[in-house]
Image 1 (tube, rainbow over the protein chains, first blue to last red):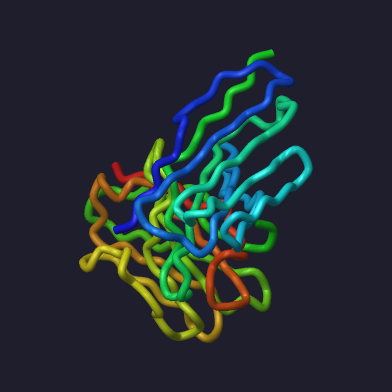
Image 2 (cartoon, rainbow over the protein chains, first blue to last red):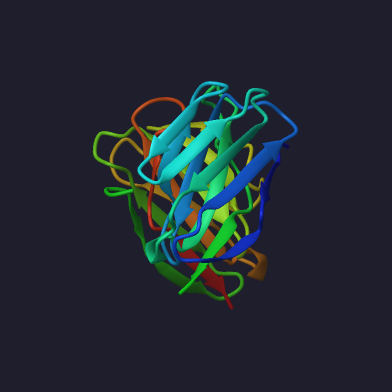
Length: 112
Length: 114
């Protein structure tokens, strides 16, 4: 089946630093999504990308849908303590008949 | 993810027992997706249902697992004769339209098999 390679696996940063994470795939997706999951909770959608090359922002978050449709990145600027959590990329191949394919997640840890 | 209600939040079962996980979608949503998440892993798609229909169950094990979304009431994911390897967090998501890009996730049910 389809697989997403998400990196890095974890990040240890200082408060105020910028963060960058990305996902790559061997196959094409029609939609890329970025989620955040807090401990004991379900994923919460941060940004959805629908077109190749699209760059979308949501506050301090910016995400891009790669031109090849096989990759996406998420940037977080000026990190704050509440940014701590696990970030997942997910791809939707379209057609509506199957679910999302998720990456394994990036653990973001912010050191005071 | 407000509105998708899953219960119970935590479920402990002995090997061989049955586990029933419930998902009430956001009011008005007729599409439900179930995912499984193992520790330190991403979510893995299991099954996609619309009211009274299973649309895609390609991610669900062929044995012991079943899912339904009746005309009335919540969607149910049923696992018979549970084994230790079934221990995981099970998440439900719902959406109004075909295609799950705008789906909202519930808080999950954490199943522990002892």
